[in-house]
Length: 243
Image (cartoon, rainbow, N blue to C red; front, side, top):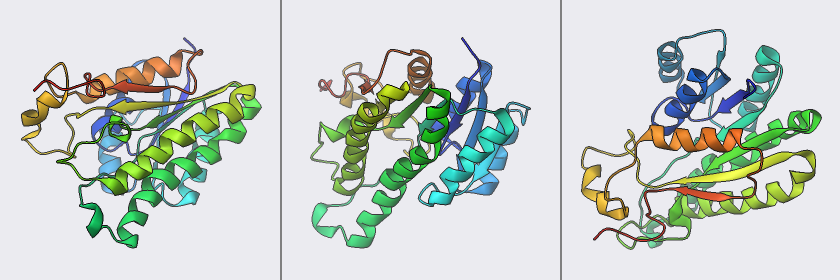
């Protein structure tokens, strides 16, 4: 497999951190991003602060951050081969309590962050006639849970699923592939220590590990015949539950 340059947003913890680690350990160049500089610097050092690692601080809700990620990847490594749009936020709130500002919070980070970070890397991928974008979605787009009201974040994630298919269609001619990985419940700092109580949400009756999502993202990045796909890495959650 050829050495690739990989941009991972939201890489200071959880799934994003493990995706960055997984690519680094297999010899790729990685540019990591998070909006909190102290946390990102800590992760940069944890990952070895080597020659094949770079970091860019800032929220992807700011279009300039995506542009800086693309510029950094090109200046340091000379290509942009993979973009993993992992940065995202999620909360529960009943629909009737959702305000315009609250909805905008999710649209800005989740949808606009993915939209404009992708826009910043596509021109280089067109020049290369090669590239892959992997968006992190959720099986909850198609599979609602009544006890977990989350219309605001799920609306933004549903838009990301739709965006993925549209991008795959528009840029397939340039050999640019665009896919979604939709994780189930995964053991990350986003969840508390009671997460294992929800194991029955998955047919395999356990919670996922961040490394398992990283493994799927890596496999899609390296397989040049997958595009326009929404791939669940969710322990069977999209298919049913272990009640």
